[in-house]
Length: 589
Ligand code: ARG
Image (tube, rainbow, N blue to C red):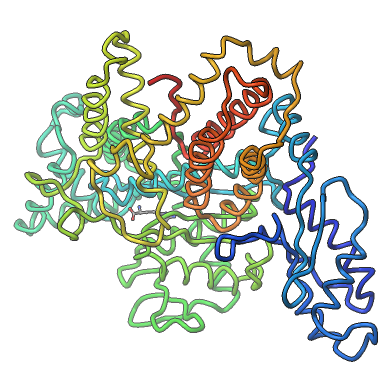
């Protein structure tokens, strides 16, 4: 059964204690955190930090308390008995330090090995979420920004799904807008017979887009036809609808090549999907008195924003904002999503800020951000090249994502084939491993940084087998698997017959870190920060290699069985981290 993370379980114990210690303050929530090492020394595994806050509230009201340390002493004394805790102490201004019981850590690990890691999934206070990610624009370039959105969004979706949230993975593709008039007219010109239209004939849609733009800008007669085409498309004329579908379909095949390589699944509900909802949604906002006229356009003025949100352009057309307002309305009211998450570059922050403010004013979302339903913009920084400028490749102006991913795979294949072991592998295994490593490296290089910072795209760095890279981590995992294989034992049998013991200090450190998986995923979900999970994974691998495996002999030692179980638990947790980061594990190197 799922008993919740260590942090949560301790919080429950401290909650009981706080109610006894300060009955006059029933709303004080327990503040429990893992202990940080101070100059290399730790006083416990976790600490409760309530004493000072409580002291400032009750000063003079409860005579037995002389200051924060005495409050800490009382919190410690009032803890209910529990087999989680080995010992407690009070330090400094009342911090209550907790040392966890080795036996209890060992038992929790053993249970996980039997019941599976899914029993360690965090529990979140919501049922359904929308993650709006990737979302490239039809016929325009799918660029590294969309790659970041795809990678980050997929991880967030995976973490929420693991935490039992029903996730609607939405690809909000830009498939509507005035550019289609131009594209369709150009298509008619180039291919008078619609049957001749296919990907091979059109070639690169971006080039096609550029050519049609040149035509649009240089020929007023064409421009006029293009503008009429938009009207005819939006009016639903078959010939125009069909051409629009053809163009979208070609773009889609392009996008799918990227998604296929990355193993990312998305459900397309593009801008066009929400178009029919716009008039009704704007009417609702209008009735609420939110929409005003401004220089021929219809706009919403919002608190603390110096520009208005334009919802109907001066030519009467709808725009990005009217679509997003309708999409948000739909997601809250029709899809009943409680958390709507948008993954785009930080440049769109103001747009989302305004859309969310409008939704709050309309009463679709509560004003208090800590309540559900809520909407969050997950922004990210730029991808930079070696030169510190926006990432581009040498010869072309833009980076084709498919080429980028293929290069990562090919480079990792070359490196793999330089290893003696891999030389005898069947071709299929080489392919699978170089894909796992190559694509994994691109993803990890992106995810390991705080998403708001810009990051520099560098193949040599991300494909290095030392340091904080996917390659290093995947190999570390493969090495653990090979330790287990070399023991010659059937790990399922060991699970049944042996018990985990954590007598060595480094066994205990590894065991405790493993147990913290659940609260780390919870934090990564709550704050929508994949780098938190990357950091955990990297530390896990370091603790395993530098502490446990360096100081505790596994195969051939008297503790062999117990230590094999620790290896297995580490491999299982690492694989779950990989899975949540969208990285395919490798078992052999
Ligand atoms: N198509 C947009 C772009 O490429 C991203 C869409 C993000 N999602 C949204 N609901 N606005 O910049």
